Image (cartoon, rainbow, N blue to C red):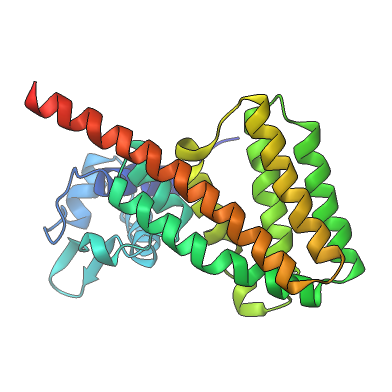
Length: 242
């Protein structure tokens, strides 16, 4: 599949910004300079700038030019932004923030799903659970099925605002998988058990049980992630003092 010039430029420039090639609050090259540098039309540059502005990486100021937004204003709930930032390496502060957000929202989502899930919702959730079980030996497929499981739970809330967060919740999961996922059989069995417990609570329309199952899952995930981050920090400290 051929990638459009606009998408290619958006990815290239977005990565450069997210990974520190251009410092926050500094000016980017002009449209003319970017057009020459990337050998593309100014229309393509403008469309890429528009997309990156929506992701809050760029501030396009009329008559002043293009500026990199401060990091704290970037849209970290955007899957691309998260991927670009974390692609360069671990960002403990960001990952900790993602863990806190996930731990905050997922128990409530699970409670609402238990209260409101329809028969069709249950079919969708169970199908994703079966996909997880079928792919325990394929990490990539297992993780994709895990994300789709939680997406199906989220849609079972029938809250249109929460449903708009589905991509963001998926991005949160993908961002912390590297710090939490373990491939040993004991861990996989525990993970499957937790997801079965959550599905069973939703199927039985038991909001308290669903919220408890989700909170326990989020807590265990957070512990593993924080342990991994502490190891990363300790390794970085050893490098600095060596």
